[in-house]
Each structure stands twice: as C-alpha cells, then as structure tokens.
Amino acid sequence: MKLITAIIKPFKLDAVREALSEIGVAGITVTEVKGFGRQKGHTELYRGAEYVVDFLPKIKLEIAIEDERLGTALDAITKSAHTGKIGDGKLFVTSLEQAIRIRTGESGKEAL
Image (cartoon, rainbow, N blue to C red):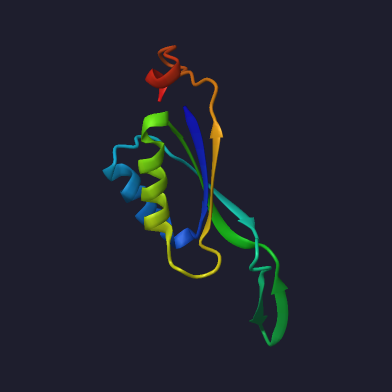
C-alpha cells in the first residue's frame, strides 16, 4: 500500500476529486494549507499599501491506495491538477505499512 500526498492549487480540487472518483478511488482526506516553493510568494496591494504574501493557499490531499492502482492514480492527479503555470504543486508517494478500519477491524487492503 502507498500513501499519496498531493499539494495542489485550491481551484483544482473539484477536478482532481472527479478524476480520482472516475478511477474508483473511494477515500480522500483534504486539508487547507499554506506554503511556498519556487514561487516565493507575491506582492499585493491593500488600501494603497503594498505588502508581501509569503505563504500561498494550497490544498493538501492524502490518498491511501493499493500498489497496483498507484500509477493510474498519479496520472489522474497530474492531468487534472495541471495548469502549466508555476505553483501547480507536487506529489509525494510514501510506503504505508498498515491500515485498519476502526469500525470493522479490517486491516490491510480491505481497510482501504
């Protein structure tokens, strides 16, 4: 099993959710986060004063998935979150040792 952590632009959340739903991914955890990468933030004007916004709003998705479906899920996320502009985001894949469904006690792939 793998854990996909995706950092995407907020307005791409619905597109990514639909793409994952189409390939049969049942569960996604979504968190609103802030951060920056190569963008290094940007400047904005507020009431005539210019200020720097260091941390940009992003969405963090966490998806637990079986090894066999990893490539398909990564493709779906990449295609649906892509804009071609800086700040599209990142995907991280880590090994997931164990998953347990609390309600039934199922573990491993059955818990996903």
